[in-house]
Length: 314
Ligand SMILES: [Zn+2]
Image (tube, rainbow, N blue to C red; front, side, top):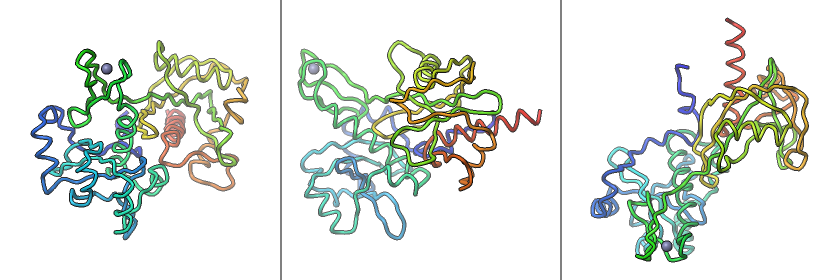
């Protein structure tokens, strides 16, 4: 396939130079932080400091705007260089968050922003949220319980107990999201919390001791009761809730008879190419709706519809 689908999926393509080598140098990191060019993505309870006027955009704060967080040595993570601008994520305290709100910034849940933003800025605030979320949950060593320390601008945490010295790398939780298909139809399901008519691709966490292919087949069998044969990787999405990587696959279903796990799913059904196409177009007459463009499920369904159309032309 000629084009890279992942380049068009929200939360991907932040375009930061992560400076893998330079970030091992603590002095270089301090220089970056003290540079007048340095900018900070402010987070408070994992909500991101934003400007809402004239348009919704991240508040790339200057160091003078987050003095309390800097003085208190709050979690500060080097995300990378945007051109020659060092970009950091910083966790701000209640008092500072209130002060920033007083001067016109808003702290907003990234999930609610994602439908209204695209491009590198959305990817950068997603990156900031994802990394901050992991760091705030890993302040203590899982091996001995001692405090851990940020190294390499956040690319590593290390236990401060010299006898232990465990190292922890920020991790992503892999999620497989898959569209089973059979002939002219694909399998979509709805969770109990979905809005009316909304159907999406089935998904689940990759478990230990299994490949992506095994996880795809297991989830399809557990949730919809179907077996599947060939599994093809399609694309992926950096997903900042909480710190995941969504791995989208197509799976060839071996049968159409469904046996739905009603605890996991409210419903699942086979959807025709025509109905999927109408749902992607947002047609109010379509029998189902699919998730919006911010979700990789949307792109996965579109990819399947386009692949089906291409196969008919041959
Ligand atoms: Zn330890």
